Amino acid sequence: MDRKTLAAAFPATVPVLMGYLAIGMAFGLMLQTAGYGVGWAFLMSLTIYAGSGQYLGVSLLATGAHLSQVAFLTLMINFRHLVYGLSMLEKFRGMGVRKFYMIFSLTDETYALLSAAKVPEGIDEHRYYFAVAMLDHSYWIAGSVLGSVLGSALGFDTTGVDFAMTALFLVIAVGQWKKAGSHLPALLGAAATLLSLLVVGADDMLLPALGMIVILLTVLRGRLGDAECVNVREEEGSCR
Amino acid sequence: MPLSPLETLASIFVMSVVTFFTRALPFLLFDRGDHPPKIVLYLGKVLPPAIIAMLIVYCLKGVTFTSLGGWLPTLLAGVTAVLLHLWKGNDLLSIFGATGLYMVLVQAVFA
Image (cartoon, rainbow over all chains, first blue to last red; front, side, top):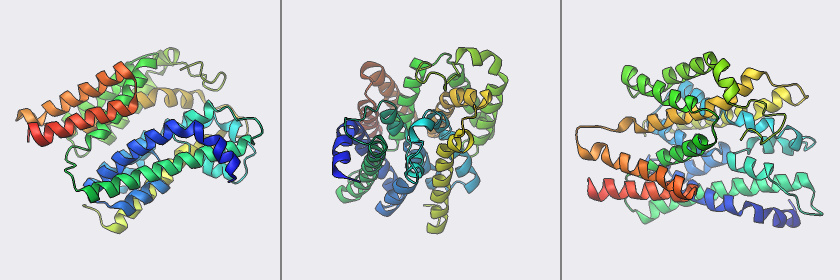
């Protein structure tokens, strides 16, 4: 990675720097509180690299969830990546080996930067995309390591820091609510999960809830398919 | 820590492989210019809000109603997150404002 490209990409990534340091630190703190030290924070942020996925991961590790549940929940919470990939097919074409890293590092924030990217004059666009992706990833790792180290070094009472996960999901939900064509999917998701919590209890609530959600949404496709613009591919951004 | 180090490694491995898979799937399926099936695009659009709503309820599973401290901090902090976000629309402010309030409430007010 040459300096010129890094220097050109850096300004665009500053908002992500702030965000990832903060959210990454909260992750490191949460993981520390769950009994996993800085090595684990580093490993998870290096190899998984997904904000909400890793927040959920803390709770899965802390409750000792079964591997099948880990796999299924990770799949579901990351399902939205499918839509991101669809709009990056063209951008990543011809990137060779680097494409694997581009796909691996396609987080919400990197997706947002890449879809809005204006590559500066005289800079190779593929190198620029790669630099953005690497910078973002390094911020995320730095944030989680920092949070974990600070959490153990300062020794302050971290009780309640896990609310950051609830707050993150609430913030995402508010954003989705504002731009949704129909609020039915969100309401249905909440209702199905609440029902599952009441019927099967807190320990096994997620899989039945997911099952209900997928089935109900598939059944409601005729009704919801019109409200939600599904032609993501034709005019990216027109549906948002 | 209910898991052994080896079990933890296995869990992290599964999370990383599955996460990569969700990111790679569109490239595996549609990189040759095929159009994605409508049902995939539809689910890709309607699932995320439903899943996030599910996770919010999941986060609230520890709430109890036997004492004020079992539910009021969560309610106050949750409302704070939503209101802050509707007001300023700044992710960090909403998340850290609400988490800070929650920590103060559970550590000092309802301890």
